[in-house]
Image (tube, rainbow, N blue to C red; front, side, top):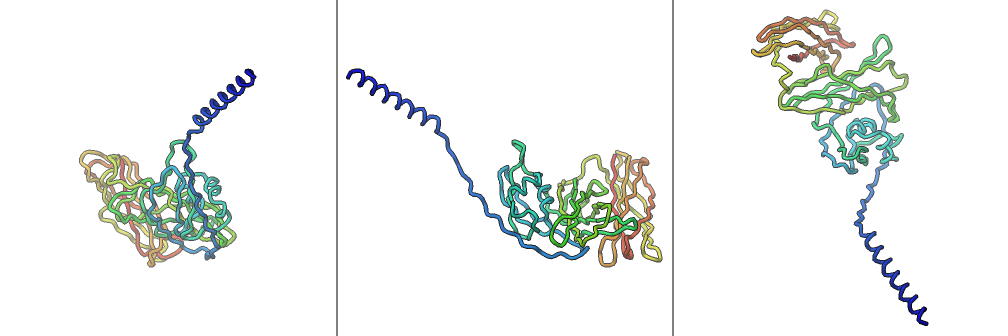
Length: 317
């Protein structure tokens, strides 16, 4: 009987110790997040080789946790993935209903957190507007696509890049190309061209679309860039209207530094305001402080008659 009592006391003591250990080991706070619903997109028809325009909506800087993104005009899955610096596979895994389906304006997508520990999602930090996207077929059966971006703000823009997509009528991406500008900076009130060549013109119907994947604004250029102006410019369009001769002078306003490189971007427009050609002129001759340098270039049209030519100059020390 005495052995039975001792055994019962021992079992009760062990059970008490076990309960204490369980309480200590499970003292953890758990939080749950509610999964957001995904809209089912519907197909939209696109036209063949149409000129498309896109506006880049203001976005809220995201935290490293998943959040919802509302699709805007001319968005594509690969473009959204580039905007937020995440793999396309991760975006599709978070939005399985969007795979092989065209996006619709207003559709909400879940943007997953970045893969790298401590990484933050990156987006275009400046709401730049894409004015035009135009593609032109060349005689060698290649395709040259031009994106026109205008800076309507008081600050300068740098680090510009865009994705150009060729989209078939079902919304599927046929080809994609990354486009960069011929100059480093886009001054306030000016427009710039970003171009991208495709090796072959698609056999099927397509529509060009563009998405900005990088852009940043700065109050003024760094000391590397000098104050250079174009003066006495003369633009002569030939009789057929398919090319223009551009002449003028470059003047360096700086009294301290000399320019070791100067670039001029010429953009040709039709009477309707459509971009129809561009040309970059470059000189590596030293331009002394306060000095003047003549320039001359020829710009050709991709097919329409040239109505006007705009010029941007950029010089570095």
